[in-house]
Length: 113
Length: 177
Image (cartoon, rainbow over all chains, first blue to last red; front, side, top):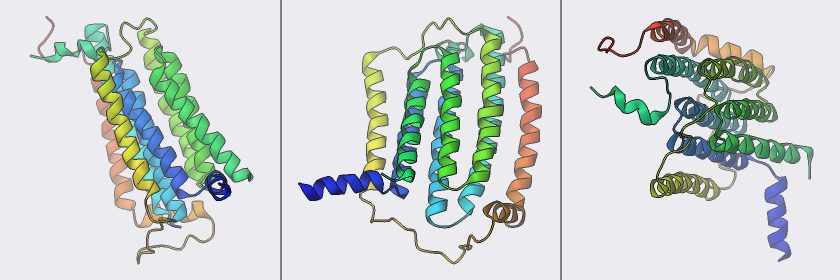
């Protein structure tokens, strides 16, 4: 009993690589739920940003705990791509809104044909 | 409890809470607000990982530029009245939640059962991070990764032109009906 509680305490007090990876996983799954469950295209884009941020956390954590700076460089590239993706996605949303007066994904069936 | 551990748990709670709010709140303006909160929390997590320069870039690029983009588009459209914030269908919604939960459980299980410490073997291409990390970062970025850096510059130019062209178009490829 005592060893179990001290083990749990060390899990809380000794923050290591695994803690950051679990945080990253949780954030990634939240973003995944957002993309799957929401119907507003802009909120879906926001959820994609959440997922990209989760991946960035794991890159930086791996980079720190392996003493390698290339993780941070990869995070730069991910951030650039994410900004570009947000710009294009929002431009598409503007274009679609002008046409259909709505950015709900349910109405995108008009894109057919 | 040490200060490091307290900081990690505090930031983890704020990050996850912000993420839950982004996903669950119906009004997109509130979702954007909590996304900005999450971005700031993630920047603080970067600070605890001693990636100070990346934390600053995160604040400027995400919490600054990208959030301004999102909020401006939301304000432009006046999307306060949301017809259907969430997908219809209880069963499909449950399946989607279950899928995301399964993925998360799988990943967390893999992390928990990985060998203790889970240190990757020190490879031959490993550079010793000595001295100023920001200086080291710039050195690596402009020597070893210079091609990717320049390619990203070209990509950003293409994206800027493409975004302007897309948002100026009337929408639709078949002419005005």
